[in-house]
Image 1 (tube, rainbow, N blue to C red):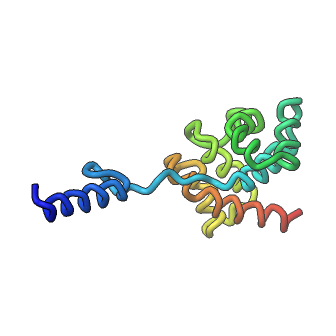
Image 2 (cartoon, helix red, strand yellow; image 1 turned 180 degrees about the horizontal axis):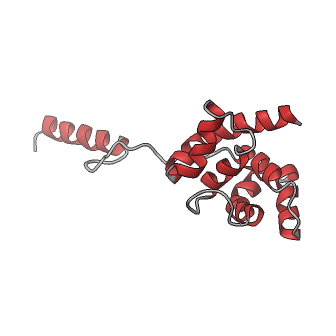
Image 3 (cartoon, rainbow, N blue to C red; image 1 turned 120 degrees about the horizontal axis):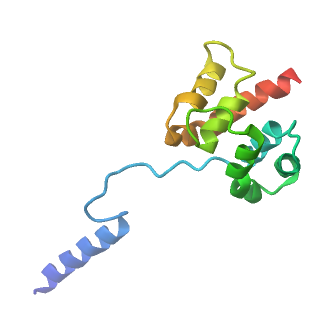
Length: 145
């Protein structure tokens, strides 16, 4: 191989390494990662009236825990505090939004959309919209208190 051909091959290899992958790149977005701090707030709110010791532990975690701990325990706390509650599937982010936004559903506005999202959306959409909807519903809940 001549020097220029080797140089062009090296440029192609470096360019390929710098990309996510060579070939089979479907350009899909990475899975959304909901805010751990918002997961704490949601757990604290949804577990507020929990009667079980486990539910109260989740409530305390939500108010006092480190965001990383809330993220690690989110799914279990949602299961504990919602008792198999809202949502047509088992995704904890959808279930949390369906429950959190239920009482503040405004009938046809953004709060309603977030409530319905929790009941009807695919888990990837719930994760993608979790931060936005959790903030909206938590703000409304805090304003009503």
